[in-house]
Image 1 (tube, rainbow, N blue to C red):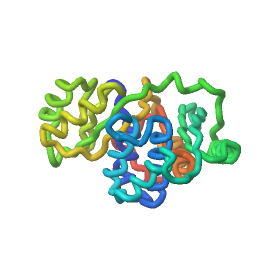
Image 2: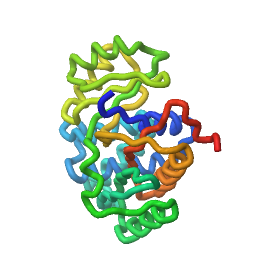
Image 3: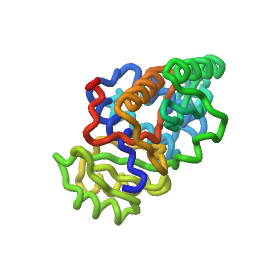
Length: 248
């Protein structure tokens, strides 16, 4: 599958098991606030806000929390001002890692991200050092327990999806950012229940490491994701189907 993000799939499944809901809510609220500040609080006229609100609903965030975050972003309520940031670096084995942040203190975030990379055997790179390896895509996942790849393929491709593939009972649909909403809506209109739908960054090419190095990079990614200022972490590491993160 061109552009298939195996780490994205693992992150999705792992997150469903052991995600810390409070931390997830905090990160989503930041995203909603920034989206509302940049494009206004009207969901219908603000595509970025519309996508993030969908993400919040998928995470079962209460409507009051969503509404409050929108009001803070649009200026109807007092709130903290967040700044977006991107950090680029490498993990062991030369794995490229892209980190998206939202913070009210850029110096703190920069120091924290650098420390996590260093303590995990990686290092930060200059701006542009790894970003060129990634492309922004829409990603929609569904379970094979509720639908078949063939049925999803037909609905998604007609709406403009770039690719559809199945791995480990997860059907993953990849779209261009401009077609994301149309494909998502087409899948829902066809009666298929999605597991997740979001705009992501997918590596153009992926590299495979030894099991030990793979575990090291996964720990680096988890440490980054555990930081309150980090919103998303992307890697070009490929993970073998038989890889067991707990088998050390």
